[in-house]
Amino acid sequence: MKNVAVIFAGGSGKRMNTVSRPKQFLELNGKPVIIYTLELFDNHPEIDAICVSCIESWIPFLEKMLRKFEINKVVEIVPGGESGQDSIYNGLCAAERWAQKNGSPEETAVLIHDGVRPLITEQTITDNINMVRERGNCITCVPATETFVVTKSDGGMEIPERANSLVARAPQSFMLADILAAHREAIKEQKHDYIDSCTLMSHAGYKMNTIIGPMENIKITTPTDFFIFRAMVQVHENQQIFGF
Image 1 (cartoon, rainbow, N blue to C red):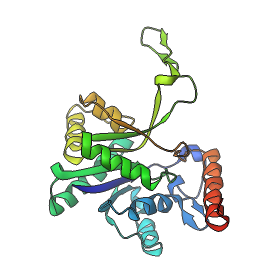
Image 2 (image 1 turned 90 degrees about the vertical axis):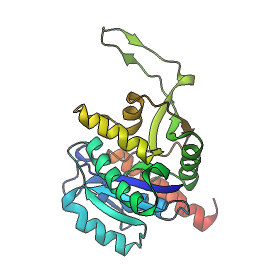
Image 3 (image 1 turned 135 degrees about the horizontal axis):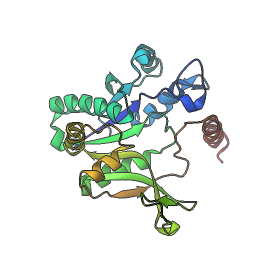
Image 4 (image 1 turned 45 degrees about the vertical axis):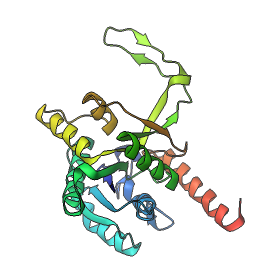
């Protein structure tokens, strides 16, 4: 089985309130956030290729950063779409082109990940690959630390037990042929607003499998998230230098 990562970085980052650049290109220690993310997949021994879905006007900058930071597994960069779902689909189509030349979509696993989630681990990637190999898909989750209130269309509400609740994060991983089929069915239905891949796949009738990932696997969406990311990078640097 081949393993390809699809990294989507098509968002403009409006909640970050940045003027000069989108959130995925904000720099920490001279390195853009998306490069921190790409390095995790580029360095993983079981990842064979990476496809990136990116804001079209930023593709030349990303290509320059790939050369600067020696990211070697990116095989194609494609423009993002009108929605997050469309951006992912564009990336999946690039993964399909790669798979057709290097095996087949039916024998390829795809790990779909946000360009602004740079705090996953090598083990999380490995766990995703193993779960897809064993059961066909994998959603990276963390345990819920607060209580969810689910509102219903009739005005009522439901409060699930926190002990039984998980928060879906990323990577969200599938057999490439399965997720492409689900996307193409959604396109036929003219639905382009699925919030993430596991929601789309669940709607298509697939039973989702989960693993527990690291709590620090946050999505950098607001200035507060960026400050947390900066602190975590400093912790990792201190561990390398001082051993704690």
